[in-house]
Length: 247
Length: 247
DNA sequence: GCGGCCGGTTGATCTAAATCAACGCCAGCC
DNA sequence: GGCTGGCGTTGATTTAGATCAACCGGCCGC
Image (cartoon, rainbow over the protein chains, first blue to last red):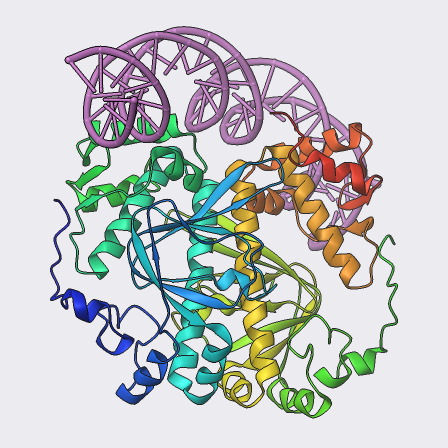
């Protein structure tokens, strides 16, 4: 299995417990909080949602009451248009916060679908606002996470607006690599949780184009792909693909 | 001049004054606040930034200390890549909040450029966080505005990822129309503040393609364009362009 | 008044990616 | 064990938009 935890990971019972002992501490909402503050946060996140592959965490139009933090597993979020066209707006892995799009209208504006068996913490939003009024560090961390989402989206807009297929795929792989690395997994060997079609939707490409881009990166000796298993052979050279592609 | 205020607008001295008397009340941060709460907000927004066309409100990399609310005028925000390619990430008109991308890293991640002579309120972010801890309605309104930004970006991602040129332009025009209308201006007659190239960058198209798309919409009798003056002759038919284009 | 430049339009040609199509592989299931 | 359907790859062809190029009109500065 190409994904190897490198950080010490707490055992499975601890994983089932609260923020205070959660290994995602440094990625998620509790970051930077004092012990007693984390314990207050614990009380907001008692509900867990366990999902099988393919199940929805929430749907477009459903009423908004809580944010979700990915505990383990993998999600995609997608928006759709009247005519059925859909666009994957993001992939979400452990420690990442989902559902912030719903605050503005009190209803979810996208579907969140588990791409493998997953678990998420449910964080009541009214209570989160209440607690963050009392805990400045939590308030600020929450604002940072919302802001990060905006920055991430701008990055995707740059990608969709001005990159060619190969650059898009390289950018996507490097982003995954960096996020896996931040979680203690290998930056170079990982298994994709999504289909070529989902990658294509996210990158604004058709699945055939994604497949060809994979093959081309492989022929250039930058990566090895076999289905969903990816090995990045040259992280630094892969970086140079972006914006050196052609023009 | 095709842009006619329809709402009552306060006179120019009032416009120069505080949130309490600002005509953008219902669009901006003060929305939903009680009178005394708005007055507290006033104290955070004493600084004004007046910019000539072309000047920058802030730049990529500059340190973050405040958000900005557009008072009058028009801005674009853009991100750029090492190789110089740039992407317009948004256009911002009065009542809209800018700079939220900078919270996550304490530094601005995009340039904000005035597209005409403009003015913005500077809102110290530390103080805004402090005040919003005391005023739940302000806290919630701020969260809504950040969330709206995320939703907006998802919409652009959908556009960039799955629409054809004509649909993209129609979507863009309808969005402007709706925002002008919300501010008491005509929904059908307005003057664009940006060049074809800037529109193109925002929509992921080259300027020639934007120009041709304008011409095609005009030939279909949906709009009238003369340079930057746009008249939407068939709002509802323009809406059907989106997602009915071909496929 | 004139020249130059910027922004915009339009035409001709090129090209990256979409589309159409065939095929291979594997997993799950009668 | 063989069948089926989903997923992925690859090839041939088409096409939307990019690129290259010419031209127009208005504005600014000299």
